[in-house]
Image 1 (cartoon, rainbow, N blue to C red):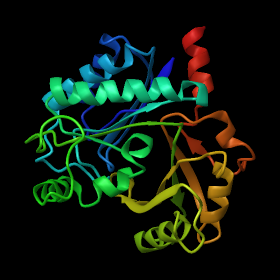
Image 2: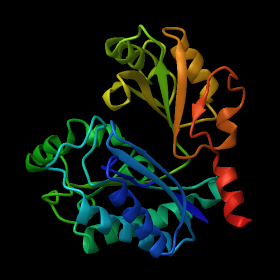
Image 3: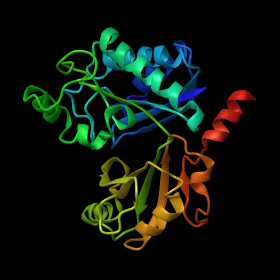
Length: 288
């Protein structure tokens, strides 16, 4: 069994999000979790399927996203380059790394040939380049970099789809998307400054942590440090909360998608986490 965590650039239209989720299921995958956010204007589905089935299910979801999402309209505060923005295949242990890589490459080829999307590989399959590197500046910058000869898709058309952009594909271990809300009087400027300090490369940089400071206007102006933790063993979420908490009080947190149970080892009892659910719990429910 392999997992995938496709992210689409739609977090407000419940019908569109549900239709994309249903497309994954119609293609043979099990839908473990759906998370949508109107400010990020993004939905994250977590799906599971066996090798040989997962790529086809993700292709069906991609087609639904291309039909329903138009990047020419405003798409929220989260960096993005595609309607189906990223489609990582996830391996839960090293024994499934090879299967995940093979499935991701199959997916990338099919997205290019059958969905008409230019595909960029990242992470292990992309020579170590990152999502952030490819998404920096959004679809307009990506298009300009392609035109300048700086970038070339690994699969599919040479230029972005006119309404659906491009898609980023990887094979990777679990990543934890975790947002920390800051208590007043913290401001957006504070959140951005804290993100710059705690992200990898910052003054107090945590290894494998990507971070942005954002303001959620649809949720009453909450400011948050939005993070991706690429190695939850090296940086458990308790360590991340402590690092941010040295600069501002963390009033609450939000898990986007699922996380391995180990990520919550030692997590403080006084920080409530919306959407807290583990990969292990979801798989157990699937098998019961």
